[in-house]
Length: 112
Length: 164
Image (cartoon, rainbow over all chains, first blue to last red):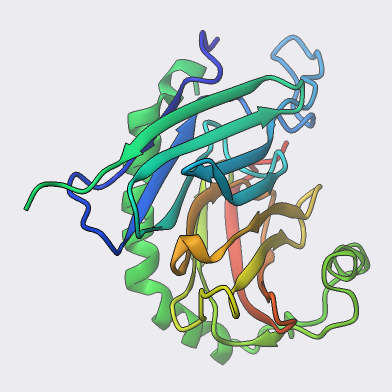
């Protein structure tokens, strides 16, 4: 069985220039159980999934994703961000049991 | 498959590979679908119709402006790559994509995700991986803050049930 839930990672391009629209890749380890499967012993596995993802940039909410268990295990999402200023990008995942997982990464412009 | 083998690097590689395939083959597959005379995807089943109504009311989604790229045949229904793009849609405070709804008609829970966006994202492009139970139409609806709803549809067959 898996040993970790909520191990989160954010990836940004190595070099960011002011005004770029960059792609952000966000992943969190989570079983995303649908509630429709059973263990090999026949016990039902209850639904348990990430249901809410909030993206903040410089403290302001810029996106929010409502998910169901129809998103794959260890959910991955990539989305754009207009890097018109430097700031902290923060993503918070909340699962159906109320656990939250947060990861931050600085959006900083590289020296020319 | 043992749980531990579903670790991060495998998933990411699979996504990249699948995304590349999906992007390369999407236009051809779309032509094949049209030629095969598929049923009209704009008529959803009752559950899906209710779900759409709950989100966008009586507005009628119009096909165009947004693209839903998925493989026509997905081997593993647990991991089906999805790319949603709407590069010609504006993303300014006055005019932007407010929400994107991703719906799989024949999943036990048809609404897979609702993605609420803002102009700070700069453009519409979302990539993720979803589960699918069996052959189904997949719907992507992009709702503008000004009220229009753009749509694209993909018919995806699935070899391995990913929903139990």
